[in-house]
Every structure is written in structure tokens, then in C-alpha cells.
Image (cartoon, rainbow, N blue to C red; front, top):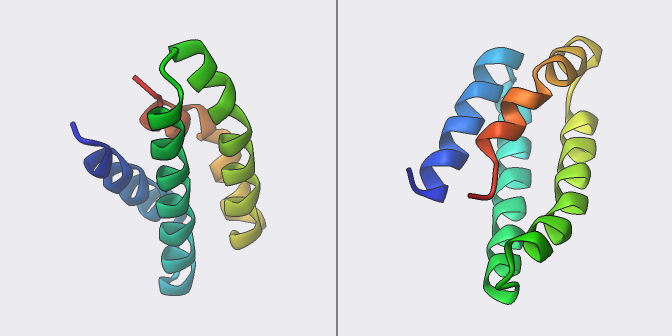
Length: 93
């Protein structure tokens, strides 16, 4: 599966699980696209897998925080509950 397909799968899961409004969906899609651009830049700069992993960790933390600001309390609780599933979809293979 390509990175673009992984991103789309993650977005569809978030949209479905969290019952996102149109505005929330647009904002989260923007956040995900920015996140993937940053990951791509790191993958191009870092040859070593462990160095890549360490460089991406703060990006993932920032993404979770930014997504949380878009969600209401119930959505955020569901997001936190399912975070490991979402994280698995973003894994850097």
C-alpha cells in the first residue's frame, strides 16, 4: 500500500470512528497531509531507520495534539481510545 493510500485509509477511519463534520474533516485532512510531507522529508534526509524513527516521534506527538484541538470532548475520548490503531496505520515501514 502506498503512503497516499495509507493516509486515505487513516482519514477514512478517523472520519468514520469520530463522525467528523465537514469542517473537521477538512482541517484534519490538512493536518494529515502536512504530517506526511514532513515524514517524507525526514525519510529523504535520514538513511538510518532508527534515526528516522526518532525524528518522526515528535511529529506524531504534534499531530495527535493538533487533531485533538479539532475534536469535541466525545470525539477526543474516542480518538484517544483508538490511538494505537491509528498509530499502526502511520507506521514507518
